[in-house]
Image (tube, rainbow, N blue to C red):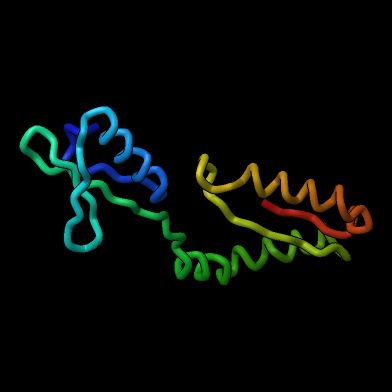
Length: 124
């Protein structure tokens, strides 16, 4: 990885763990650069270490949700689950999106609050 010019991580803790590992294994000390970037000097080069959080495209999502096609589908879902409270969610299908913890939390909620069973639904 140190052969790259730039290494990116989703979370600061991942970047920190990488830098600590480089310090322990290779004795590298991180340097701090303008703009909040970290760097590691490796074989006469500076390797930039960045943290890039995924930003959900909120404005684009609003346009999609407000479209006629989505509104028609929403009406179908409302009719299908008539009388129930609907929790709707839209996520990426990857390991960082939190789908599994979301389903686990919903299951735990229904386990702890049985009076809501049959009254709410999670639409993913």
